[in-house]
Length: 142
Length: 362
Image 1 (spheres, each protein chain N blue to C red):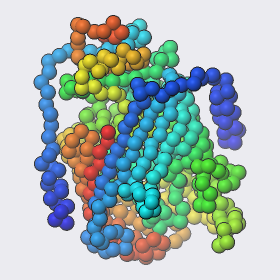
Image 2 (image 1 turned 90 degrees about the vertical axis):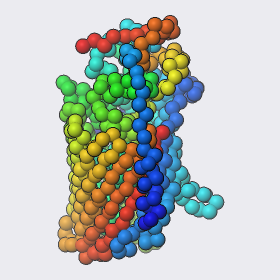
Image 3 (image 1 turned 180 degrees about the horizontal axis):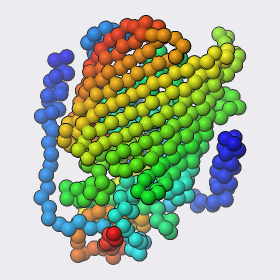
Image 4 (image 1 turned 60 degrees about the horizontal axis):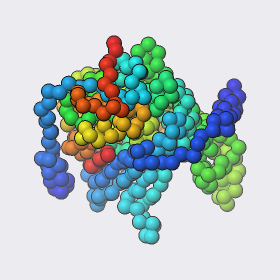
């Protein structure tokens, strides 16, 4: 029992939150294959919750996002879920076999590389004037 | 009507597989996602010893790897491989298993087909019963999910099945609906039901869930099967019919107050023509205090046979789930189990235990 209490105390002490300071504009990036596609907020919600898996042309959609606090807050807003609910939702889907969760990238270069080879990539990231040719920024239509 | 629908589904699956020519795909690393989860537990009796661990034990509960191969726009292979309790086959310790392994053919968001070994999609918990990062509590509810370990002779449904399935997502207005229909070998004590059906009957189950809005969702589930009964010499002497149905509610307010409720009932018609009516429920309240701490209270009840008085089983759980790092959870809870004098498993020997776990999803 003593061990049990020590274990819990130790783990509680390790609890921490990393806070990033960011003022970048959050954007939706898509692979050129999807540059003509229509993205409403509702469509994006379905994409980031795994409920829309292909576009009208049958291209398999692969959502991803840059792993920063600002981008994640935008993701939670789009999916209309709190961070805990979003995490819980995807744990249930992923581990029950419903499919992969949105890919996360801590490095923008890796995100661009992924988006360049994934024809159905739809990703949340920060605004960048030097986007690769294979990726375009899209606007959310209401 | 059901029989015809199943024949139609089977026919359509065969037709689809023949009609659609798929080039031989190579599983490049770009199309492979590897995820998984880890769970480490500690349990100890604090009162009574009928059904709990009086020594207090650490348990390397499991490590699971989940693979998703996206072979084309339409084809996905998914599998979950588990190693439980420190698997060491040379010493016959622990368990290594395929939780699920199936091929999924995506027609569109409304219609997908699966073939392989799958979880039985029934209620809230069965498809995530091994995925400890996906549940607030240390274990899934025993009354609705492992009722054979609390005085029922038969489970409401088997954990896994091998067969075919049709599933999809439907959206109407602002409501989201998802469904799954599974047709499988069902269960059997003697043979491997993931390889061979022990009788001609196919197990059938389905589930429909509706997310009414961002806060509340409802679901209905159904399972039906016939399993063989064997005499003392191992010779089949009849079949037992199992029918189970259930309803579920999942609610979470914007302020973090949550509810998970599930009711399961059903009927067993035994090989010797006896009827067993049983039901169970689980009710869990929780509150996300912040992004880290989530205390919870779960109440469970099982009536294994409505014709037998005082055979019930009840479980009360009070605990807290603590997010300690990205997708790492510490759980600490107090469990109290009480049973009636005629309960087949514990015969009224009540016990209490503490349980704790570290679970990590990755």
